[in-house]
Image 1 (cartoon, rainbow, N blue to C red):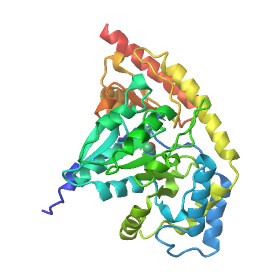
Image 2 (tube, rainbow, N blue to C red):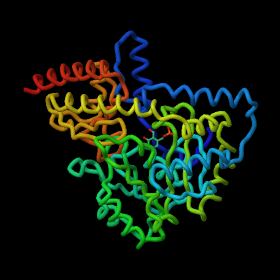
Image 3 (cartoon, rainbow, N blue to C red):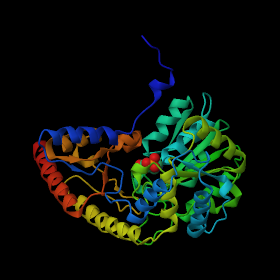
Image 4 (cartoon, rainbow, N blue to C red):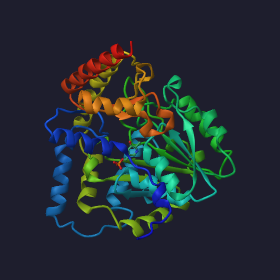
Length: 395
Ligand SMILES: Cc1ncc(COP(=O)(O)O)c(C=O)c1O
């Protein structure tokens, strides 16, 4: 019998992929399933981006690129961060990686080991906790509460720091809640973080261009006083509907970029060359397709929140970012996982239990509204019928 390394038993997963597989299996049996589970835009990548990749292939860009990415792309990333946040980023500190996840895994590998602590949002993207545990570090949950709009409180983050803390993970706008951090809390946090120079921060800003109701994204890159501690995680997957292209980037402090690049060389050499040219077109090209996508998301967001609040036993606060709603389902009398399974098997609606995002997700369900208004409306009717039946059965 082969023997696995210890870390393998500690590695978790992202249950969105498991729900997707079960939904596909049910569809193969002829059942109608509406998916409100997947974390990707239901839009095609804009045509000019696709064309740029085709052109790159035709132009003969078939070989390795520099491990940290094509210079023009890293310059375009720096220019885009300047456009969005008014910050000066040295393209030499930018690393192009195959998707947002790679940055988080690299950050965990760089800082996590037995005896150290990593603070992560809970509920939060499940790979954070999984990758922390894989390294042997202790995951320290930062609870994100509904009463705070699922945004962090600076005081709470700072309170969790110990001499063993190596890394803090932050994510705004957030998966799975759509919560967004306020400028006031970000500034309080930054003021506190400067007193802990031994702590690195990984700010996952992959939904940074997906905000609603005039909310402003407060990027941590805006604060030069923590620049030496900050790793920015961002990428193309969500903003440009490019999840399958595997295109992400990170910005590292000067003293860490070489380590991160060495991890890239050991892991994947470089990112697919044609995809990098597509990334340049995305950053430099027209933004009308993105504006259209965001206005569709906004319409669905308002619709889904309204409908969720009409369901028996369900209440849902308004999310201000990403494309997720995180309704409170505790008054249905069902546990999150129970409701996820029943909705999929009995009602034909795929959603994700809040507990898939950490222990503090009990009592909630993640609803991705990356689906058409018609499908969302039908999903809400199905959920309504199921929950009504459930309510009557409990009487
Ligand atoms: C918060 C967050 N960070 C990172 C990622 C990973 O993005 P990618 O598909 O580019 O690896 C996701 C994807 O769902 C996410 O929700």
